[in-house]
Amino acid sequence: MQGWLQMVRDATAAGCQFSRVRVVDTPMSDYNRFSHMVAQYNNAAGEDIRYLRREQAEAAGLPNDDFWLFDSKLLLKMRFSDDDRFLGAEIIEDAAVIVRHNYWRDVAWHHATRRDEFAAR
Image (cartoon, rainbow, N blue to C red; front, side, top):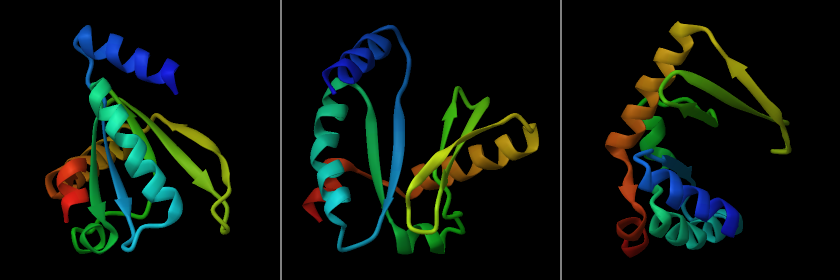
């Protein structure tokens, strides 16, 4: 994890941005509680991790997808089995699909709460 945190520190010092929204069930699973605890270190390194309750995501019309956007131009969609095993990721290059995912990212960001504020609730 130290390697990741150093990379985030170096990249943010160079002007890059790292941000993500984690959609979580409440009460949170053991894994999400662990991720939430670890997020304080990511945030301290310069990443901005925020949280959104699943009910809020559904009410906002967000899909139940896990994806990463890089520079708003490259989409990496995560694939999982029915029992939540990670199967891999797919690079998506279709511009219309990427634009739609940028929209969903922005909606999620609008409704999400900073890590510490989420923890206080």
